[in-house]
Length: 248
Image 1 (cartoon, one colour):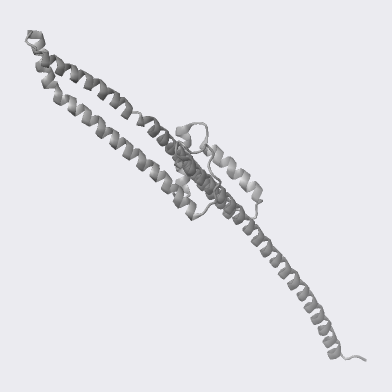
Image 2 (image 1 turned 90 degrees about the vertical axis):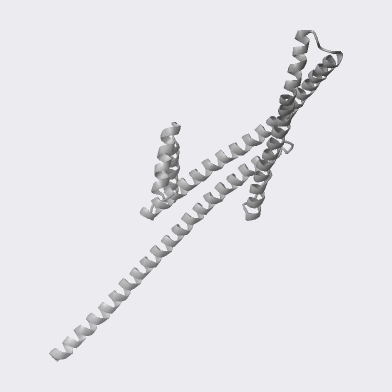
């Protein structure tokens, strides 16, 4: 007959065995679940940053393209060259844009100096011309006075042509300035949109890390589109407010 002590020992052994097996199963399932969750989270996080990096690269490529178009001379082809987003490209493109502005400054300064010289020369001739005109009115003008006045008139005509020729720089300068201004506006728009979209996407992902990335991207694009809006003043106020919230 089994004693009570042996019976208790067998019961304890059975309970211990069952408990150990159950604990092993629970621990294994828990570890597996946590590992799966961690791996899934890591994959989602990796995909999120991959998409964010892709959007950043697209935005930078667009900026480089705008700078390249602004840097082209009037004799360059209309199509901008294919670009790769590198520091060397950025340095070169900014240098070319800076060179355009430098050429505008030099051309404008030289034209201003030439025109001012012509104007000053005719200011200096005015007293002499006034004397000759007085002589003509009084009937005391000499043939030399007439010849001198005729020479002044001829010089004035030549100088007016020179002024008109000198002012032709404004066409080329205007084209260069328009290119640069258009590029700056496009760059500003791209940078703001890039900052807003990436900032809103990062903020939304931080608040709801488990949400579908495609859904987050769609909502972000919609939010940025609504911020830009149809009304310029209201849109700019909304954008400024959102930029302030994002720390810029």
